[in-house]
Image 1 (cartoon, rainbow, N blue to C red):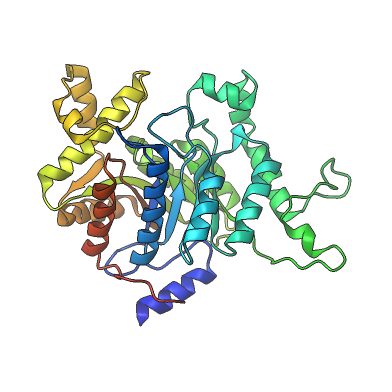
Image 2 (spheres, one colour):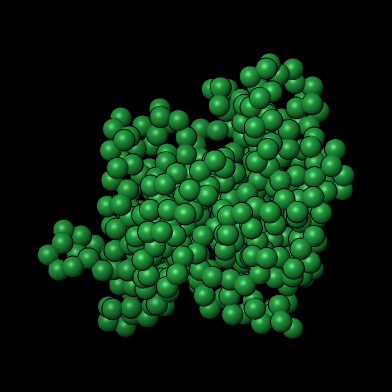
Length: 375
């Protein structure tokens, strides 16, 4: 079958993929392990595992989780831990971070974590990197043990270069880290009796503005833009990425994806009820009251003021929701407007069943395979 051959070809290319079914570009998933009202973190993480297995079964290309901190409604504070669990419960789908906020961590630590993931799941690990803290300033200061947060963001290119050298074990002679090695990693293939695969995680840059777009272009790396919370900047950032792109050993031409909020239900009214939960959760977060994702009933009954209503309308304007056909139409239009090579769908709603069903309906709308066969 053509789709099966496409899947085999995709496994050889760590970046590019072919769309399956009638999708115009490959479809992937971005998950935050959202915790709803009345739901435990353990239950939320089980749902993330179910969703990863569903995504693999239905032919989604990647499954990424995002680093966030000090947010009761988001359980994805430790992407590497979650990805290790998902590696044990999947077989073929690419797994990655969307992303790891590099200034929060020592590059060597990330190289070791993702080298370990690569050992667990050879050839299917993505390391998506961001320069934002993934939280508020006070929490970022606690993570980094410094109040000089701006300095960490400004040092991102240097941190990225250091991380890349740890992953490749390529510090030059005389460098202060030349005798330090990230393990698991390439050094294990250079010592007596050592055997080590040549693969390593694929590095992506993530962003919601032009900084990482330009850097990804200059370095010839794949780029993923956070359209789901910075829609006004999507096209300018993608244009900047393409304009500054320089071919590299990784890519000979640009490869860009965007994160998109999308939610499908059997009828438009139910889809609207579900996406309201995410809008209310975002209002609370933006006003310093982070909490669990509310139920649809709580979101419907919330008495918003005029400013909040404007925010809700603005937020929902950038969410593709409705029936499967309506969601497909919205996603197709977005793909056409942006010219992206891949989309990563995020569905931050309250209920497990509704979220899983949304991805099934979107997969059906694009005629994705109903079951993956062994490669």
